[in-house]
Amino acid sequence: MRDLLTGVTQFQKNTFPKKKSRFEELGRGQSPEALFITCSDSRVNPELFTNCEPGEIFVIRNAGNIVGRKGEADLGMAATIEYAVKALRVPQIIVCGHAKCGAMQGLMTPEAVTSMPEVGKWVSLSKKALEDLSVNPHVDRLTQIVEANIRLQLRNLMTFPEVADAVEAGSLRLHGWLYDFETGKVTVLAPEINRFVDCNVRIA
Ligand SMILES: [Zn+2]
Image 1 (cartoon, rainbow, N blue to C red):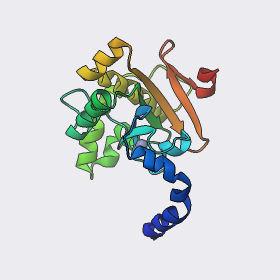
Image 2 (image 1 turned 90 degrees about the vertical axis):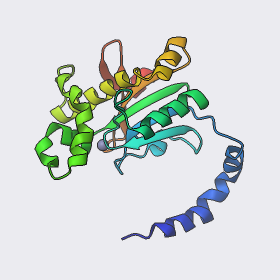
Image 3 (image 1 turned 120 degrees about the vertical axis):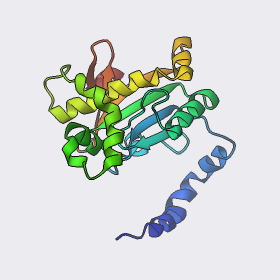
């Protein structure tokens, strides 16, 4: 097993000195560009694939990037959304699912998680995603579920009054992303066609 404290020592020696002024600046406060909701999966590293520096994204992670509806979401999720929108006034919320998501695999095949009742209960919060799989017949079933779950969580975010109010006021935008860690590619949900498209196409 790798000793993670060795990594801390290397960070203090090599990385921290190069970013020292940035960390000092952050001591005066944070003003992140986005609330970024993604999966806990170790293969997904949002700061890495968005090329973000410390202070730029405010992150919530759980198995399956599940938000849940207001009242159904866990307290940590609800409180962190409230803080991001009301105190930090983030201008965007990104729900980012990913390829080969184990949580969505558990939603697709519940019998695989019968020995993990908490996992089963948690992923079942996304079961409505299973009713929304016909939008993109060109991708495999698991990817369709990952995409449908992103759309579901974007709808769930709108059940939080502070989110709905800020979207209505034009000060907050919601985005759905899908990250493929094997290729580094990100596709983004294009609401006008309800499909995920290459992020470079969206930028162009
Ligand atoms: Zn996942």
